[in-house]
Length: 401
Image 1: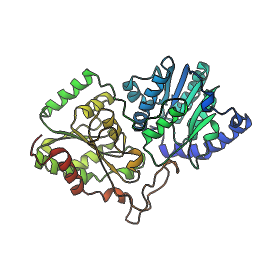
Image 2: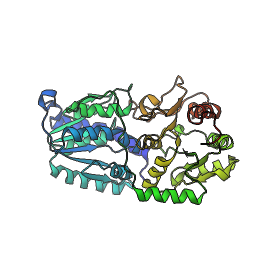
Image 3: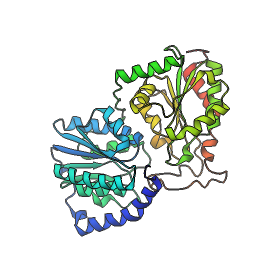
């Protein structure tokens, strides 16, 4: 069973913060020479660290690409959770990928110490920590590096002094830009527009998806929409009501004869079943939740005409395959995590007085306290407004593709 995310965050806060203070001050790490503009080196061995979130990994790839151009001879490795390995492989940008399983506390602990020992021996001259608030990654960076380290100074998170240099985290810019600011700090030229690094979908995976779609009577002439229902267990209030997805699918199928593919994780099967209870035009709908491997899923997004998703990895995978996406937001703000890279993408956000309630300043640990009940911000996004926006943007009053 995967280690509970909220338990991990509890440990990260109440054990991680004291450990950062203890190790940094006992070793005088906080008084090490600052890694300033006049002090930059021609780095040969660079380690990138980002543990949480497939979408976050996608958003940091442009920064790594720019870093590779700045230091073309450098070895650039990546340390992440095992669940992010597939998207890291598809990027084809890292020389080596090291991962940690979090299927149990025992497995997690064993892999933490084995990776620490292994990576410390490599003697990296630069380690960049892309985590926004986790003390766990700051400690990893602290113990692995013997030279320069860079990370975020995020308000209230008690971690910046673990690095030899840091960037002030800005909660008012898109995360892709925030990630890019870390490599700007080590000498990469600033960019006003951050473009996604496109993922390399192999032909075999695309062919497999095309076969699956043909089996469900989907042709290349059909307007294909992927609707991703879930948001994993990471703050479930980000989910749009399942009945809304069903109603939106019915409207799109009924008026434009679209084909809809519903996707989600294997453990999100109950949401799919609920869709099937509510949908009327099920003959044009397909359930592929939990039935695709990661490469197939990315290939499905790539060949689709549109993705409709709540605030989760599907939004950023669409960006990395140049597929338009309609993102649905409530607890998070699209200012930070919205669709990017494709100018035909849309987002929906009500900006309630309590929104956004999960931020990198509170380590995304808050609870919904809206007086209308949990998930009120997502429920206020109506099927009618989403349908009208999709109609005006992608269909132009045509009845078929």
